[in-house]
Length: 339
Image (cartoon, rainbow, N blue to C red):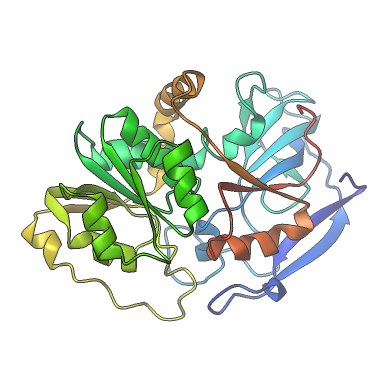
């Protein structure tokens, strides 16, 4: 899986609706050389996440879109192979944002050193990284769960949702998931400890939610919006809270979809709040301390869906938006020397 050239995947055209593999271009260029104060990273793992669909569009958002003919953005776990930076040495493992490419030069400001003795280095793209922080802070800060409450989470077997349900259980809540297959629901209940899980493809959402949430819904952790949110709103309790974290059901929409009836938010005096993990970087240590302890104690379980080869990234990403992944989706770009 190593090469003398730098493989890169560029955004070739802006997708209309669902992305196609022709929207991307796989190119090869010389491996770059680090300048003064820079490091050269060899990508080991690339994270694939739903937010990337928004970065492919030129509509207004919280960050600038990826420029056409530019390397697709993405979080990475890499090894430093050349260093002209005083804080990094050759051989260091680092978490960064080098994008869809096999090698990248970095100035080091956004790199975080990883200790492979503490956890598998790929975990930094999931449970001890951005997805884990999203689950932790959106649930605890926005949702503010209290023992005995009912927490519903969509995309329950995914990188964020699977952690949300487990933290909800740690906090003494009833955890109810919504997922896209019986296998994913079985995993949420039997492996992760959810109290119930609803198959959104085979069950009628309103009646299934009523059965799974006999005392109503206090917190809805929303990764998807759309039909699940509409069904949840009919069963929220007084003072319910809704961390709005993702809109995966809408990312491929060519036109904004009709919204759900928001009247229950008014009647139940509920809180719905948008959440961006970027706002919580200054509290990373707090998150890492808690999640690392829960991992050591066996209170958190974690599943990865690893795809081999950068050339398969675009196909895997398209599958992610269709719900085909099972666990945190990662591309293994180069060999992992820690394994």
